[in-house]
Length: 311
Image (cartoon, rainbow, N blue to C red):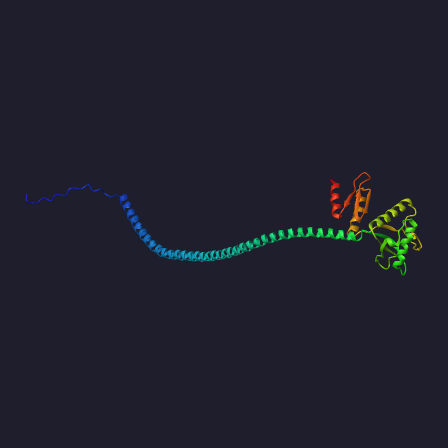
């Protein structure tokens, strides 16, 4: 048995591929081929996206650059505004400093002015006190000058009247009233000035002493009291007129005393004072017969009296 015996190789258990397996294989290959193609397509897409990414990056950089530029511009403007505000603040601060200095100066000036005003006020009070004192002294001197004089008011004027005619009129009055006045008792007699159109004016009659003046006034009062329907008139002075004019005879007062006397009469009438008269140049007020007489020095005294009456 030299011939070699060719052994048939043992059968291997190779599974046979049926049609279904072949179809599956074909299908898998096809799928694999498709997957390969898709993968290749994806790589191509990735390459395109990279280019777009560079462009996108460039755009982003440009946008950031623009944004930074805009921000820098806004910051520059803001910085400029801040500098302006700072400068304005410095100006305001400087102005406030100047205002403070001005206010301090004005305050000092006001303080000085107040001090000056206080000093002037004190001087004014002192001056007013001195003026009042001088007025009182002047009033006393004026009162002494007229203390022997009486005043005849509402005396008719006469053409070409002389001082002798005035003396004769007073002498005639003295005889009519039985006063007993002699020419030697009269120191002077004058007609007071008045407007030309006035038909009457006052006469000042100065006696040689105050006793004669007081006696003359008492006689006039007594006569008027006893003859209420025939009081002293122009006929008692031997002055011819179309009608008899009443003659008012009182002691002569100073200019200041006349004003005060007028105010005192108005005050007496308004406040129910029964008596208001003058005596030796002094103005007197009396509420009634049982009241004490009040000497009125000036109009300020009347104001004080009015205030006391209102309480």
